[in-house]
Image (cartoon, rainbow, N blue to C red):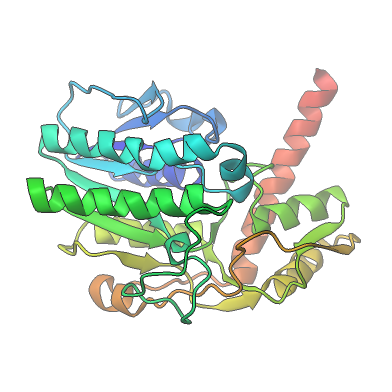
Length: 319
């Protein structure tokens, strides 16, 4: 298949590019590298089945190639990034989604929208099911991301209803693994990098808020499966095993053998207290559920960051 993927040099996007190339698809990777990295895709750049277009998808993009799928993964998904670039975040989620849907319509292609568990906000039900409409502060500091995804979902279904675009939506819960950036700002990468550097691990609040962590290989397996089934409603993908943030910090310290301490900071505005996906539908429709336990995934992620930090150190010395 010919697949256009925005955010293809990002964390999840680069893993998808690899999976598609391994099965013989032709990939058009679109990225403006505001949070993506050429390091994530450097192994693909010489492939005849891979084409890179450096472009901000919030502005129109014209493609001559035939396209079977348009996958919109371009997004500033880290709180550090979307709080720094709120307007870019909204434009990527709204204008970018509109432009990608326009490509899908013009090419008679199927459309895939990468949504997020953040559309549920600070949830009042637990775990979160797809039918839950959420508890979101529409004007808070996180709203640029939350509402860009909620608005993006609305756009997807408007195109589905008005233009009969064949659509898929996945609401992605906390995912981690190789190809995350050192300064990503999300909790898993934060803790690992801080531990490897010997810095204090920063926990916001008392650390009793919960998250459910899905290793990227498990997520990609689920993303590939939803492209193979005829299911057009939003679908949760994530790992339902729930951990307190303080538990994660202690496990990272154990696995890295770090002597770092834990430092508690004030809880950010609208930070969700609980987060856990109900994946009943994914199990039934996709015959999918995560296979990789947190400790196993963390070991792989720690090794990735260890190598990346060592490479950066060598580069700084040479520089």
